[in-house]
Image 1: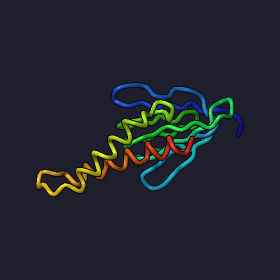
Image 2 (image 1 turned 90 degrees about the vertical axis):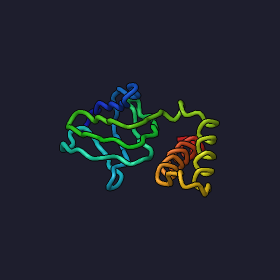
Image 3 (image 1 turned 45 degrees about the vertical axis):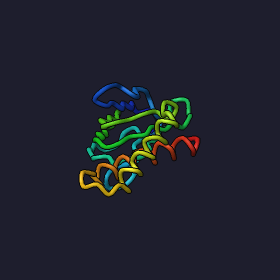
Length: 136
């Protein structure tokens, strides 16, 4: 089926993407999934990772997403993410600082350290850095 699908990526703070796409690939909690125009409707939770899509002009784009949900309809994909950033908007210095802080918290021996939160922060920082470093 030829045609484009509308992609919308929003966070509690802002709309990150609202444009037509040829295909959308996202990090579902049970694995990566892809959506083309005419897809069967479904909903899924998301894990931290890279959402990829090919825009209407054929250029591959990348967006960091962390948590949330995705809804696929035959003509639209809506992503409600806890956080999301286009690759071009990721600040490399901020991501590296976040990674260093998370690593420091994880190696700290204090009882007040929330290891699960520190590990999640480290994972988010690493995905941002990988996205920047890969050029995608």
